[in-house]
Image (cartoon, rainbow, N blue to C red):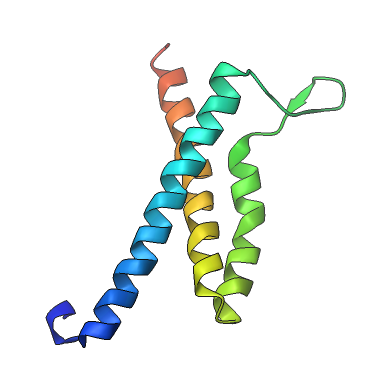
Length: 101
């Protein structure tokens, strides 16, 4: 399928994949830095309810869709990478927590 695409479309696809990949990596590293090294946590109601960072990812999903629908593909790529990083980071925390680490 990719071999049937014109060269211009292949380059555009690579650009979108690069933006998505780089934003995923940067957002994941930033999330882990703030969570693990700076121990920044967001609590609601005086420390009783912790807002997990994947909720912020879920909150960014509509913005990602809006950017995509309005043909702002670069912004959509970066937002999609950020959403992916936030969700993957939370999955990592849940897996390690269940393994007792």
